[in-house]
Length: 399
Image (cartoon, rainbow, N blue to C red; front, side, top):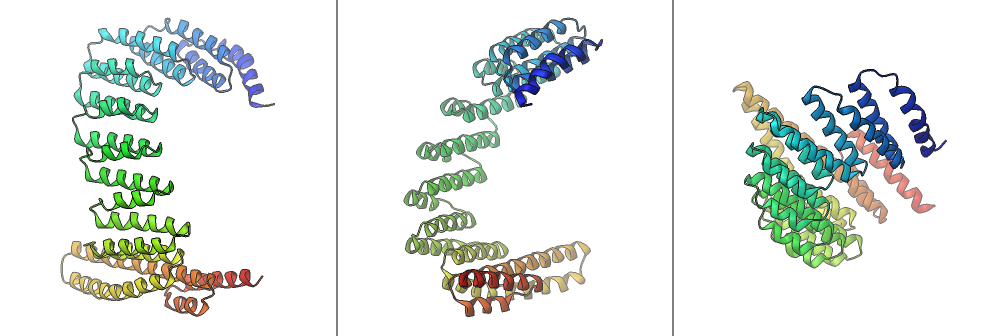
């Protein structure tokens, strides 16, 4: 029996047999709601509509006003999800009228927010905006406006979403929603419009994330020149190095090795400006790895050799920090221990880098280079793994 058949059984038997035995009206409504929603999912819209109608008749039997409001709110949500939007809209409006007489302003605002959020998700935006204006709590109102703008952007109503976003007073919330709108625009290929929004985003993290996403989408569309032009606007050296490395990798994947090499070297220049020693090492490691995978083995090996020199200095510094901490407070000790852990993590990454370069060298027939990389791997298990992978690559090449 297929899904539609099961839904038919559910509609004909479960509804009739189960609900007639339930005496408590509240529990009966809960069961009927679930049945109606399931039937609607399977495409039996008319049958679902009948059950929702029965539920609405039963709601009037509930005496507790708060329970009645909660149930109507949930029914309206279910109906909106089941694509009975006009009926849901009618129930939402009925709810708004019902809660006008509520004296508890906090609870009233909470219900209005829930109604507004449900209507926004049902894309009943005009009505949602009216409900938002009724909320007295400024934070709750601002959050509902945020959610409305978010859903508008999801639906492609970018202009309306931006109109609401610019009215949000909280700079973090405003940056967050502008971030989302710009993402959606870039995903739709509206790169120029998305870039206009970037300058209006106040929070640095959101601004960098949007620029990164626009660049990624441009790169996916093979708009390399435009992507590189935007990448130059990124001020944070670590973020700039990361995104340039991504562009270069995509160029290499498409056979543009000469251009890719130039962009990789721009990524290296950006990485050299990173102030944090650990972050610099991690970034250089990632660039070397991507260069190796892009076939630029000699360049990757040069970076690797430079990294080894940096790491030898790091190990000395970490050891000094650790020894000094023994003579000081336990808090200093824990800080030194964390530093050593970070150093160990980087050394493990270096082993992975040696392993990857070894495999890439083998693929290109440079077995001597591969074995030199294997000798550098300190972790015994990873060294064994590297040797196995090299053997498999060689066997595949022979066969």
